[in-house]
Image (tube, rainbow, N blue to C red; front, side, top):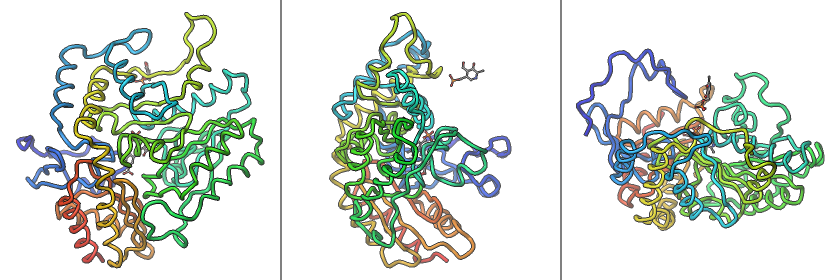
Length: 441
Ligand code: PXG
Ligand code: PLP
């Protein structure tokens, strides 16, 4: 246990991401160790991880197989050039990913994060159409409240206002579907909501407005995570697939959160039985331990590029660290851990218990909605008048004091525990959250 690592006394230099820096630095919250379902804090407490880090440590923390794989790989082949050179581990991982991917998904393009996966998929979409002689298809369609990382393409198709408004004019030629949050009709739904599949038909309106021949792709999160957990209405994703197919538009599922077991299936595409043309992934690919992402594509998307003289590069795109050996080794060990421990099946088995526990919070003060699917859960709070986000942030701080880690976005509490969580740990997490909510101003 790394308890001998002192808390630093100068926190100034590190400009923290997506953090209230001044608040944090006055009253820092430091993790110094982790094992399985728990973090260890710098003041020696064990904190139950209700969020799998940031939706990424699906197998739990400091899992021996992953740690050892990283150590071994670092000593054997630390880095190999990613362009015009290969190494076996990246190829092996790609094959293992394809083994668990939906039928029809055949290729893996490596990135280093979810944000980079999104940029890669958007570029691939435009280039795919051009390679097929449909160079007018350049428009990208996202969705209100969507989160697709923080790079320019991702915030352009994304729909979270705070992530966009500070950053200028963004990408041109982007349009947005409406979000699917219908609290008036769907509040308190367990699992998938009944109402809202018709919102997919808005794509027909967008197609009529711009012309299908100008549209390259539609990108959506199968379950919207970051915005506060919006579960797709029954039939919605199927409908999107039908309309995109009808108009020759690629469908991209952003599976950065839903990938690698979060819903109790390897990917949301399998859970919902809808095959997209591309899937963006990251996070659970390496259990969050080493940065790595991947774009998964159908054979058709990949094959469109495989033309022209064989010595010429087919796609002018890639990252210095694409398929990094240590990340690849971490990925293989992570997939093996999921398989050996049956963690995806386990998530599916325990999901009904998770659902019951979450919905037991109905009726507590300030709670206005509860949503869940797989091992994802959200509790929406009524905002304090004139002070949005404050109530949920106070809940987060109070939860941390009581040794549970939750996430908040706006006034929504989001949870996504490691897939190894036990029933007793669900009871502790939700029971403690109930205590927090009862005492919240
Ligand atoms: N797409 C989706 C759907 C995501 O959820 C990204 C892309 C970007 O991935 P990177 O690796 O560039 O962060 C994400 C990331 C939260 C939270 O608590 C969610 C994310 C990241 C950090 C926090 O909601 N999602
Ligand atoms: N900036 C400069 C000056 C570079 O030389 C490179 C890569 O060679 C990059 C950015 C891109 O870095 P990465 O490949 O790690 O995304």
